[in-house]
Amino acid sequence: MHSNEKMRVILKMGLRSSSLLVEEFPLASKQLQKISDNEWLLDTEVCSYDGVGRFVLGLPEDIEIIDSPEFEQYITSQVEKIKKKLAMA
Image (cartoon, rainbow, N blue to C red; front, side):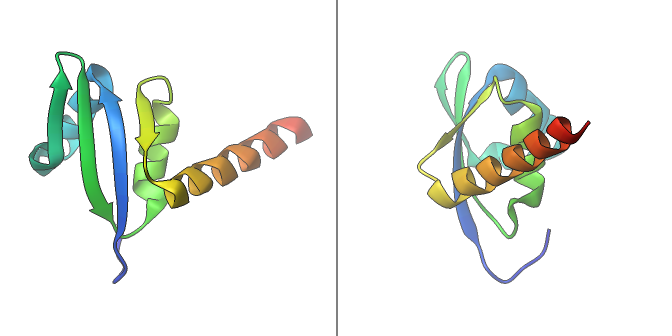
C-alpha cells in the first residue's frame, strides 16, 4: 500500500500470526521483538491500514492491538461494516 503518510502500528502477536507474517514478509522479522516463547511485539509504520487490517481481521484471536488508537478505530469501522452486511443477509 502506498502513501506519503506513515502511521505507527503496534501489535502483540502469538506464534501463529508472527510466523505467518514472517513467512509472507520476511523483512518484517526486523520489526518483531520476542516477548516470550509464544508472544511477539510488532512495532512498525504503514502507509495504509488496508493490508495490516486484513491481516488482523483474519487472525483476531492471535493478535492484540497495542497503543494504536487510530488503527483500533479503523478495525472497529471494518467490523461494523461486516456486521451490517451479515444483518442484511
